[in-house]
Image (cartoon, rainbow, N blue to C red; front, top):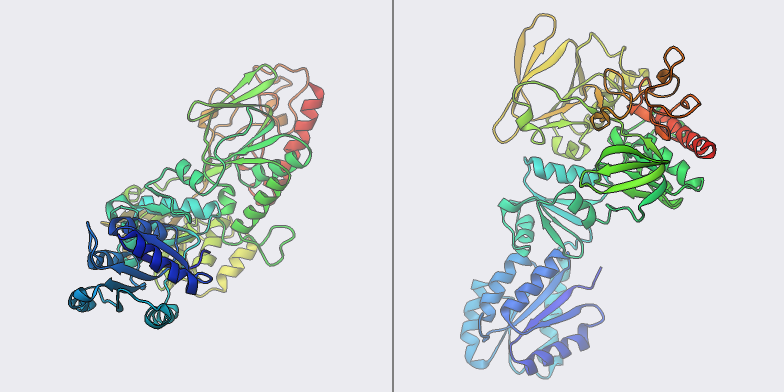
Length: 552
């Protein structure tokens, strides 16, 4: 982090150089002395410093300047750096104005020109001001900052994207003082949020995911046009395939639509994954797998949606949403599944404003001492209930069945039974939601009697099963009636290979109806929906890719 700044402003170049010289002589080893020739240019400098998250300790402004007086400058500077100590540099004739400024801009001191010798007339004053500032400095910000509204779907989307991509950030409300100062520095208003500010001061208002990915340093474009292996999807299966593919010498690129980790990456804690007896969060597991893939030389592309797959001779051609393409010898499809939408009146318009799909772990600290409702009876819902119970006053788990035994692992059921704050409501569904700026009420219905009741609620998290992301493969690959990709022996019916199959052999175990294209993890029909099996299938797919490449 750069040293705190002492900013001097004077339109007389000789005076400006002199005051900066004297300041550097005494404080240059601990502070960065910056000088400006006018009030407007000084304010621009302050905005840049604010956006970069730097600290300003002292402002020394000349009283008489064209365009903007020293008092006018200090008055505006207070909005950006309220903790900075303020000094007015005046001639003897202006002392009365300087005294009046003490109340107007909360002036800390005024200095008469000339201030020589500085050991007597300058340094004692500045020493005192720096000592006072050091006791209450503004917090330096070396991380990404996001300014937004509390109940805003676009603001939530930005925060969720950053969290799922493991990018640390600081969240500031637009109507808080510091958030307002950052908006002012970025020349933005509350209507422009969410505003994202990088540590170097670069800022974007309402960025797209691709713009945000580029801002935080995530790779969004491939470095080559042709690879040995393209992995589509960055969940456990995709990351497993990328790690094994790259480690075994294949030129490998992983393409992810939004964020690596998939649904597993959103899990607060996975306790039944081999090798982690104390459990591991989805974010930790994802981070380790990403770093491992990068270590072996795999490329990871974010915010790139694949919309087409075609055969191009011996190559396989993938088309992105923007029309660009990438080709490879082989492809592993690991696109996973997405949560189904809960079709109840009032919920769609409140999504991101109290209604969330998946764990939305970024919201947990905001649920302190509040009632949280979770829909779903599988492991993901149980893990979320455990996580939110650390913050919420009470967690209500709504399930259609009589109990959790049919859909949730025993270890999670036992864990929930030990948490007094978690209450399971059997035979219960959400019939409707209501609210103005955010979710305020839920209508719950009993699946047996049809009886309904209304509850006050600001937080609803939904985990109601999954559907594969395979619409873009319609007519390209064989899929089952639910959209899952059919592979291997299941493609051979009555001794007959799938239509269009051009090889003399049967499809390999994880191979799809297009030779050289494999499916792994949750997207594959009849797969075991567990993290460990997904990773295993990703590794197995790479082994089959090698066999495919050798047999061509």
